[in-house]
Length: 228
Image (cartoon, rainbow, N blue to C red):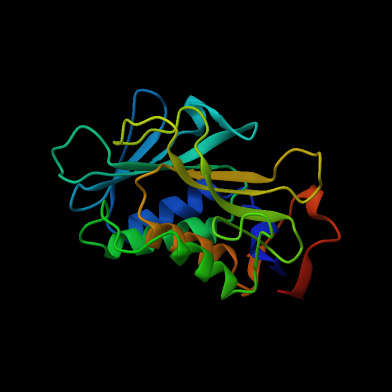
């Protein structure tokens, strides 16, 4: 077992399903398998859902299959989600777990009270850098291997707002230019900025994370703090 930084390049240790499943179980979310061979979790109040969808292979982000989908509703009986968020395999499970912990504390997970600057401020507080060309919408880690940006949504991202040309927060890691992405994440247009900020702040945290294995593409870019 190694403790490594930076978190955004640490990968998911091939344990994204198990770690997030444990987090949700600890929060009291109910789980059952679906006919699509996915695992669906629902919060105790019925307002939020988290689904492990990798087996169903719903679609890709950046050429990578989506693994987790999060959603929030305004009423437990509502059929339509107000917002959705999607995460591919490889995303650091600590960042997704911290997002779920923040969602679980919210009485109204479909409502946000802050603007997009909240996300950028959270990243800059961790030492990330605003993009020189898009300082109001994009921030990048100091090693220029990971970005979080408010931009046009990719295809198949579902949101209650039906208007075209909507923007939402996107995050991705590409440690080797021109090589496949390490992971990608996408939040639909109505996702509250303060919830996205919780994910971003955890993603940029300098606290080392434990890993048994690390992605081959980040060799030479990770710092091994200690071995246990």
